[in-house]
Image 1: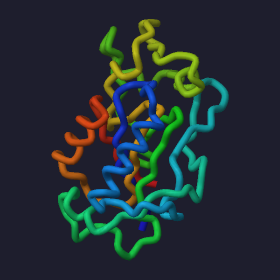
Image 2 (image 1 turned 180 degrees about the vertical axis):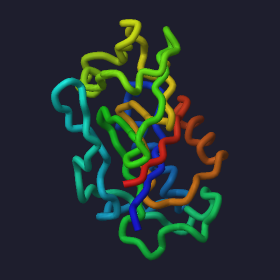
Image 3 (image 1 turned 135 degrees about the vertical axis):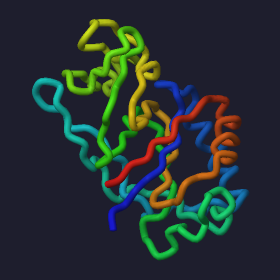
Length: 198
């Protein structure tokens, strides 16, 4: 069986005071018994990019064996199908990211990337995420019309996320919408939901 993730990612490239937000959110999740308070080896690490010539890219597992927070009894109240919680799996935790990351769909790939300026699908062109990933810009340059736009103005299908903050749930079933809304309110920021298969 392959592993899968659900990542909740702010719709901003640079979330201010990410470490403070993480501390507050983690205390909240532990107080609701959604995750355990102590770190353990319960995640595989996030997917990332290895860039090669001509803006080609390879999705790869850049960090393996990351520590995370294993799910706890209260997790059953924030998922749609609690009987699918990963009780039998070692990889079952919450990974919290506080560095600039491309939250991608892994083996699910990408079907469309629509430029907000020319409304063209650029997925089959030579688009380059490296300047965003390296922190040189918060924009993506459209290879068709030549316009730079904030990366969050592009439409990615399936959804990808771009931020220095993210909450990745390993092998959890679908999260309840009301939980996502509550987390958005706590972060005071819209979130995108990124599903990934590895």
